[in-house]
Amino acid sequence: MACIYGNIMNIDTTGVSQATANQDRLTVNGVEASRRLAETDLAQMENYKGLITRVGRAKQMDPAVIAAIISRESRAGAALEGGWGDYGNAFGLMQVDRRYHTPVGAFDSEQHVTQATEILISFIKEIKAKFPSWSQEQCFKGGISAYNAGVSTVGSYENIDARTTGQDYSNDVVARAQYYKSKGY
Figure 1: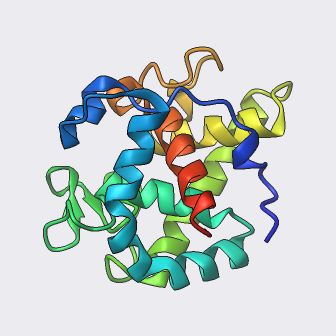
Figure 2: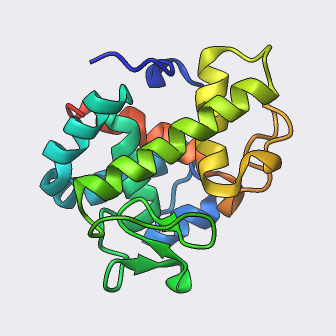
């Protein structure tokens, strides 16, 4: 399935920070730590593979990116309480923030994953408008960063994650997505 927003395998990434890796008490950081975090979530992620693939196909979004965001945001649902995370501010596998959006569907539904994927796509398009000279892959990564912290927080490609959670969000999601791609997502 073609992703019209770019090829996740062609995006540079430094992976996760040590601070984020510490959530699983990992002694490594970077791409290796991102892969280990994604691997920890793989068995649980398999429960959602069908719906991730359907939404990816419908929205022309790489299913590996959807899986990576689910892994980062909710640990494939394991970090949620009643579908909620972020101190009750964000809902669902992909953590749609109720301060900015009205969450739809059940926390693990196709409706939810579709809504969150549409939000991601809107951010990719906004980044492209903000940085018209960026490559397709740079805009893809910028949109992933904006998914976490908003378009206004993306100031340059070199410091793309400066204002994201852990200062590593898009780099971690890209590395996790590259892992999930190798697992058939």
